[in-house]
Each structure stands twice: as C-alpha cells, then as structure tokens.
Amino acid sequence: MHTKPLVTRLAAAIGALFALSAIAADVQTDTGTLDEASAAKLFPAKAAYSPYAGRNFPSRPLFGDTHTHTSYSMDAGAFGCRLGPRDAFRFGKGFEITSSSGQQVKLSRPLDFIVVADHSDGFGFFPLLVSGDPKIMADPQGRKWNEMIQSGRGAEAAMDIIRSFGTGTISKAILPMPGTDAYRSAWLATIDAAEAENEPGKFTAFIGFEWTSNTGGNNLHRNVIFRENGDKARLTEPFVTMKPFGSDNPRDLWKWMGATVDKTGSDVLAIAHNGNLSNGRMFPIIESFSGKRIDRAYADSRMRWEPLFEATQIKGDSETHPLLSPNDEFANFERWDKGNLDLTEKKKPEMLEFEYARSALRNGLKMEAELGVNPYKFGVVGSTDAHTGLAAVEEDNFWGKTSSAEPSAERASHPFVKAPDGKTVIMGWETTASGYAAVWEREHARLAVRRDEAQGNLRDDRAAHDRALLRRLRFRGEGWRQPCARAHRLRERRADGRRSFRRAKGQVADVPGRRAEGSDRRESRSLPDRQRLARREGRDA
Ligand SMILES: [Zn+2]
Ligand SMILES: [Zn+2]
Image (cartoon, rainbow, N blue to C red; front, side):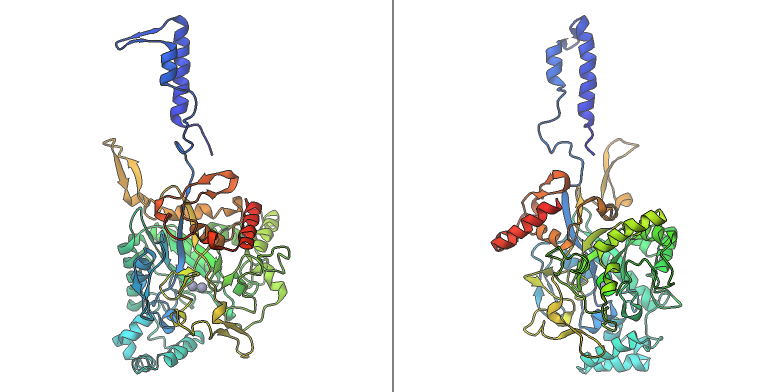
C-alpha cells in the first residue's frame, strides 16, 4: 500500500548519479560548479517530513443513505408520503423542506449521497391516484380510492389499497407495470430528479430502485443501484417481482442485472437488507426456492452482484442475535425477532443462523471450502429505509419509518405490524433511529482530473467518472478485510466532527471542514457508555 513516492525514488537515482561523477570531479555547468554536498541538499534522499504529503489511501469518510423511499412507493404513498424523489435528494443535500405532515425539517448537516430506492412493483402509483390520472379514474377501483382520498377517507383507502396489492386483487388496468406509460414516466422522473440534484464533487444523487421480493412475508429485498448516469439508466426499467414481468427469486434478479450491464453499459450492484425478517432465507445453505444446496453458480452470482449487506435500518439490526453471539453485550440491541416481515410466521431459533450477517460470514467460509467460492463475503452498511422521503435517523431528529409516524405525541404508540392472530405486535416505538452508509474516499469527486492527451493540460473528465463513488462502495464491499464495525457505530463517528478517526492498522484520518461543525455526541454520553464504547473500539481495532 505504501510505495515510495516517485519524487523520492527519482531523488535517490539522481543522487546516485551525482555520487558517481563526484568521484572524478565537481561538475561544471553553465550555471556554475555543482559539488556533491550542494547536490545532496537539492535532492534529499529522505522522505518528506509531512506524513500527509504523498498520502495515497482513502482518508475521508462520506456518509449517505442507500435506501430512501418517496411517494413513488406504493406503501409510502398509502401511509401519507407526498414527497417525491427530488425532495428526497434536496433534503439529503441539507435543504430545509416541508415534510408530508406539514412540518419544517432539516438535517443537522448535509449527507454526501442518497439513493432514492422506490419499490419496483407499483412504481409511481400513488401520485397518479392522488392527482386523479384519467386512466385511474376510468377504472372503478381507481375511481373509488381517489374519491375516498378526496373525501377525507384516505386512511380507509390506504388500508384497502395495501390489502389489494398484497393479495394481488388490485386492478391490472391501474397498476403501473414495466412497459406501460405510467411506469416509464415515473422511472424517468426518478432519473431526472437524480440528474438535476447530482452535484459533482459535493453530492452524489444515485439512480436506483428496490426489488421487493417478499413471498410468504419473508423478506428478500434488494436495493439496486446504477453506477452511471441517466443516459444509461433510461435504457432500461426496474426489475419487478410480479410474474410474468419479473420474479421473486434472487437468481432471476442477478440474471437481469447481467443483462442490464450488457444492455445499458452501466454497472449495477444490489444491497440485500433486513435479513432479520427473512425467517432464515437471506443467507441460505439450502435454497428456499429449490430446496437444494447452494451451488457454485449461486455463489458466483451473489459475489458478483451483492458486495454489501445493509446490516441495520429502521426495522432493526441484522448483524447478530444474542443466541448467535451470547458473549456480545451489544447483540440484543435494536432486535426485531418476533417473526418475518408481516408476522405471518413466528421466528424459530434455528432460523437465526441463516439471516444475520455474522453467522453468514462464518457459514460463507465453510461453503468456500466446499464450493471454491464464498457466497457471503460482504461488507456492511446501515441505511434508513425511510418511507417519508426524509433520510433522517439521528436520535434527536428521527422522522420515522412512515409519514404517519412523523413527530407527534402519538407517533410511537400505534402498532407497526400486527400478526394475523392479533397477539404478536411490533409497536411504533420499536422502530429504530438506525444508521447511514459510510464510504472511505480520497475526495468526493465524481469528476476525475485527467491529463488531456492532446494538449497536455489538466481537465475534468465528467463523462468517464460520474458516480465514481459507487466503485468505492463496491470496493468497500470487500469489508471482510476490515473489522466488521457496526454501521450504526460509524454514524456515531460521523457525529464526532473534527476529531481524528482511528482506522484499522493504526492509520489516522482527519475529517475535512465540511463535517467539522455540529455537536459532539460522544462527549454528552455517560461515563459508563463511553467506557463501553472505548472498550469495544479497542477490541475492534
Ligand atoms: Zn425493503
Ligand atoms: Zn425499502
């Protein structure tokens, strides 16, 4: 990693040259006589004093959210979200905006990147329904829901819509599907918003969507992110789960991703999330779709397309569980272990091993011995999964999972999910102010500076390096080399402002000015908390 800078090597070579000639005599030149002692001063053989000169590793942490939903997601719209992709990006950039519940909202400091990841199925339905799109109004079901919303019975309409969508009884005539005008225009609007709000060097607005495989209520969701600009993303449309347009099997998603790279020329990656709600299906040894053991093809594809796992978000932590990590006092933090996503199936202890990150990393090593490829060699990030258009998960600025849970006296007192039997419940207060994704980068540059070959001068290479950050995300996906730090702890580091961060291998990185202002949360922690943190950091480092 630490090679000698070119200047040092040159100096050593030139020094050797002068040493040879000095044996014979001092060197006469047009500018006078150069003796050995003077030459040695001009070309010192030692490295520069400043440890920062010639530094060549990523030392700047960038923070963002790879998982923000807007009103373009069917469920977000039903729960009252009225913000669109453009609002979500602008909020991430640090602008003060008005939330769906009519309150002013702003981040304590701007984020560096946002992925608007609306659900692939039903993409863009709600804005059309609310605005009374003619095609929707021509359908009895669509007209009924629109009239319910207009007459103040929005909550009742939302329940009916979610139920119809979940049971597949929503009218095919009004549901935007790939290939329809409605679907395409929503996708293009998402792309346009990213293009408009992307600011090279300052803020990266990623183009993406969420592929929401949820068969039997078992969460196998993936967020898919495009590496390149809108000109490439416009050449395709999101992959849905609904047959015959798409599939709920991750293998089919990976096939689609391969075809998308060929078709558009844009690399893509997928980030799986909420293994904790998959009931033993997120990191399988036996595939739930075929009942067969994971084979080499599965392992190859998963490694090619899924270098990251979202280990924490508003619906709980997916890193580990007390039954898997009995000696880890943090393992019971932000735990959602009552069942699958809709609580239609209770959790059994034997499921845990196949849905949490730590046990997956261990099983991956075992599988590598058998298959030759480790399917579970991933890095971890946190993200929000906010369905409010607001990537706001700081403890003192938490805007919840849905617009109905935006700050109010009653926000936490209603059930978040209720099992069909009515007995098992996850309450609103159990949603967690979870985390962001962190990426180490040299600088936030979507523009690479390149030497113009024809003229020799420096120029910005906009076309070649747009969203270069994603390459870093993929690189960081090789996170098995780093201590498996909890993503939410990275967020605490974010709050540390100007302080130095200790990295693996004792490297020290200073955070540039943009993150300098703001409160220092760690100082405000109680002493035992700080000691625990210090102990844990010491162990991880
Ligand atoms: Zn999801
Ligand atoms: Zn989501």
